[in-house]
Image 1 (cartoon, protein in one colour):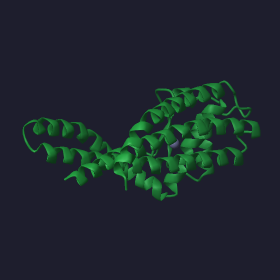
Image 2: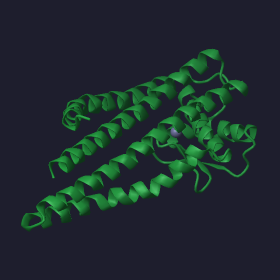
Image 3: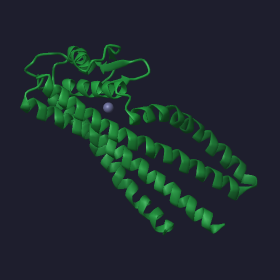
Image 4: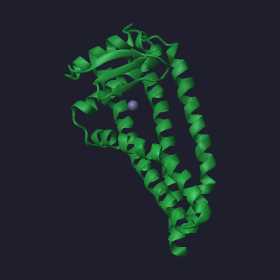
Length: 240
Ligand SMILES: [Zn+2]
């Protein structure tokens, strides 16, 4: 394995990957905005629809609440709450209905005891811990390495990075698959319950695929960083 070549490739790809991330983020906002102006013919609001879809999915232990912000919608599995942002909650636009149906898709994953959903829930606190511990780790490592053990401390920091980015790569891989599945479930629910007609379903699909692209960007970024630190660690290990 040519680790040096892999390392160079990851460095070259970081900028295009970052640009792709920015483009997809803008894509979500503009697509959401565009279909926020399109009211669904059913006239149902996102909060009403959430309740309806929860009932249709046989879920009776999940609450629907309104939270601040824009596009901050999420499903909180710990507290069994579908959180809809202010821009979604009372809206009956195609965007709002697509987004809330997607969150119900996550509630269905939770209800079905989806293995990936469990892995993701398990990874969140570990990743949070590593992310929080990471900066102090680098700082301490850098201070110590001024005087002595330069090589071994550097080695320790590099492997900590490999573990951190390895975990984050795994997290985004699992997340990506869950996000695609939640959107698939959402569109199926919207169709089966007759909430959206075929034209509106197409529009909702555009909103959800724009959101999915941001997860692809996050996944690619985490993969690049993981490969970058892994190849760096391997080059370092071979030198010794
Ligand atoms: Zn989601």
